[in-house]
Amino acid sequence: MKKNIPNLLTLLNVLAGSVAVVFALKNRWDLMAAFVLAGLVFDFLDGFSARALKVQSKLGLQLDSLADMVTFGLVPGIVMYQLLSLSLGGSPDLGPDQVTKAVSFSHLLPFAGFAVTLASAVRLARFNLDERQATYFIGLPTPANALLIVSLPMILLYNGSDALNQIIMNPWFLLAHTALGSYLLNAPIPLFSLKFKNWDFKDNALRYVFLFVSLICIGTMKFLSVPVIILIYLLSSLIFFRDRDRS
Image 1 (cartoon, rainbow, N blue to C red):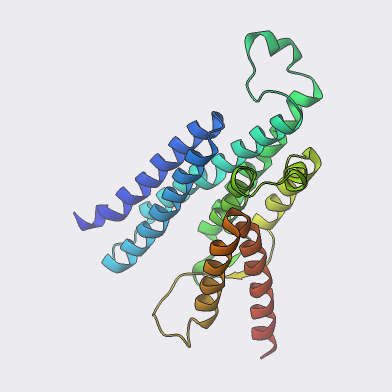
Image 2 (cartoon, rainbow, N blue to C red; image 1 turned 135 degrees about the horizontal axis):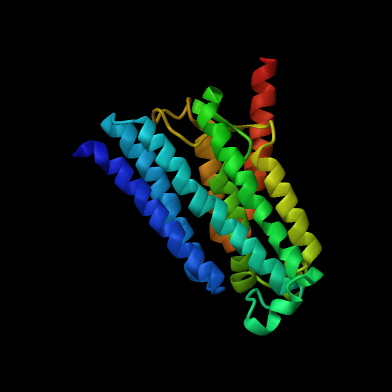
C-alpha cells in the first residue's frame, strides 16, 4: 500500500495542473495560481514521501515528469498565450466570427508563448536521462520557471501600477520573457537543489539562507518577490558553483 502513496500524490499534481489549465483559459488568474501552488506542494510531497518510505521507482520517475509537464509546462504556456493575446488588444478566444481573422498577426503571435511548453518538455526529458542532476540542477527547473510566468498576472492583480502594468503587458516584454525562460530551462548552468539530505546547517547553509531571504522578499513584495527570488537563485547558484570549482 505504501508504495502507491507517492504515485497518488503525483496524480494529485496532475489533477491540480489540469484544473489550473481550465482557470488559465478563463483568465481566472488567482484560482489558476492557487492550483499551480497546490501542484507544487504535491510535487514536493511525492518525492519526499518516496524517499522517506524508500519506495522510489522508475514508474514514479516517469509519472513525476508527466505531471510536471502539465502543471509546470502546459499551464505557463497557456498563461503566456493569454497574456500575449490580451497585450495585442484581442480576445484570447476565437469565436465563430473571428475564424476568418485567425491568420492575422495578432492572432498568430500569442502562440509563441507555447515555446515555454516545448522547452519544458525538452527540460524534463533531459532531466530523466541526466544522472548529474541527482544532486543539483542543470538549467532552471520547470517549477521555478512556471512560478516566474504565473507571477506575471498575479503582479498585475496585486502589485500593479500603471508603469509596471504597461511593462508587463507590452508584447515585446512578454516575447522576451518567453524566450529567456525557454533558454534558461535548458541552459548549461548548474543550479543548487533545495532537496535536504539532512538538516545540518553546515551542509545546507546556502539553502537555509536562500529560504530565509525568500521569505523576507515574499513578506515585503508579495508576488513581485517571485522574479526577485528567481534572480537571487540564479546569481547565488552561479557564485556557489564558481567558488566550488575554484576550491
